[in-house]
Image (tube, rainbow, N blue to C red):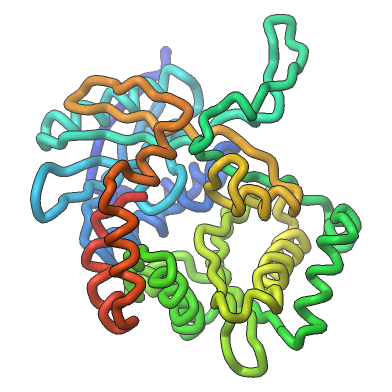
Length: 371
């Protein structure tokens, strides 16, 4: 008897989360963002509707596409897989199932009169590609547009000792410098540590002139991810001067947020923060670390490169009213940076506002910014 495929779109809160998470844990392309925890936190903290497009073969799950419907106060809704992170796209057993998932998502778009569908996925390494004969050849990264966004990934060795030995002497000395400067790092999994992270993060976001996520967002993430969300904090005596969050998948660890207080950067808190995370997840047996999105050649790109991270494609595909919009290498960069001439002016004003104001107003804006 031939296998029967059944495709459906449903609200995520009516789909068996355990079945979904088992499939995600078994899929080699899954990221920590694919966990049901991300969808649950998005719905709980911001009230956005979470959807799941799924395919079953003879009642066995063989493909998923997690989606979040973001409804702004003015204008039409968008459907994103997934918002507030770099990627969380289709996971499928084969290409046919993948196409079924996308087709069903487009049906959902039409049925709910949604304007855009955005699928965020990761692609191949940018330092090499395969030619027709199967041989690898170098790809000219420098030829890509200057604002091209890439995903920075690092393969991890068997333990932290081997990881430290792989670093150049300069990097190892910077880690030791932070410790010599009196800094200490702690890793936390308890919910109360969210406040320690948020105090540093909110100050840094105001300094950048950018609306901050709500404290409730990070509390919802912690409640949903549980032990799979690590909070790292760097202290000078008892004062938090750096903090970050790492999410754990089945094989991969990702760091979506990390911040330091500018006035203490001379003490190198960021070096100690990243080493604390990397050494810990390496010793836990994780084989890959996702440093997140960076712009080719810029400061954060060079920072991540020194830890052994290599650039990989980020492929964001947009469908507008059912029509696929041709993608370009710098499309994500243009989306992330924005084209408004007013942006530098607005950012400057934001930096001058009291922290209490940016912490109140920022989340009201940030919940609708899907980047």
